[in-house]
Length: 90
Image (tube, rainbow, N blue to C red):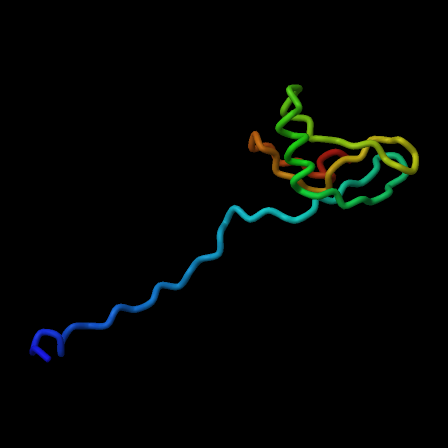
């Protein structure tokens, strides 16, 4: 072994950071009329958000299976950067 390699420092392993852009598996929606809750897969909500050519300040909404009322997301950050909260709607 050469004298240089004796004094060489060993590389420290870097800690892997968890990805910051992780999204939830589901988005919880609440009916504005009967307050029924439903968990809808995030990918479905995101796809509807991509396909909707309308006003980006309005979140993707679904019809309630109990009363046909509008369902609003408890929390969802849209593809256009808007954040939708049920507490803002009520």
